[in-house]
Image (tube, rainbow, N blue to C red; front, side, top):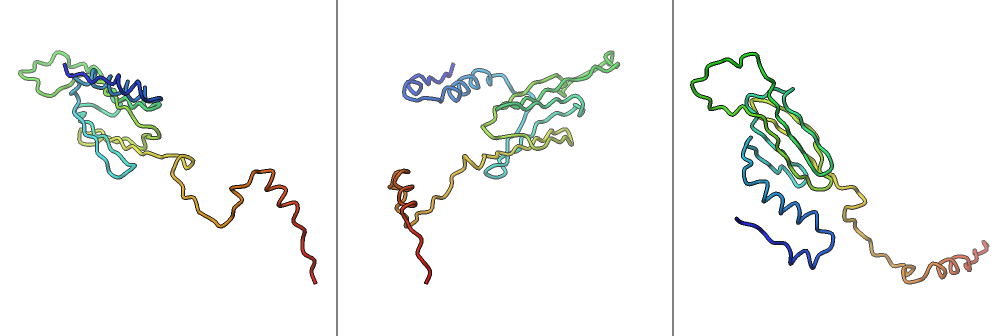
Amino acid sequence: MNRLDFTPYRRTTVGFDRLFDLLENSNRNGQNENYPPFNIERLSEDDYVITIAVAGFKNDEIDITAQQNLLTVVGQKNIDGNDNRDFLHIGIANRNFERRFQLADYVHVTQADMADGLLVIRLLREVPDALKPRKIEVGGSNLIEQSDDQKVAKISSKKPKKAG
């Protein structure tokens, strides 16, 4: 068994528990998950596409649920009245499935379409403006070095010049 041990990192980091748990669980749970096949594509820095092969499923048999940091795609086949068909060979996988994708913070689903047996889910990462890096301009003012009380005193001690 190929298991990663994050204990040394857990001792020296704070607040990364969720990341370590995610890595450990994905390694355990991902061993036998191979149906349905899927692709994850990065279109740009913040745009992603997940394409899942769902041949034989109809739109109403696919359920997509997005919640905080988790995208779940479930395929539930409706039972037809043709259960008494006599197949000589069944090569097309036609079983129910549940596929889970862990999403990073601020990633959300923008669109889902199905065509030609492929389910295409578009994702977008939108980081709030308050969390984006911002440029700080360096100015000639030395007000930063003064305390708030000194700023107030300096402003109130200035007398307006008389015209004339």
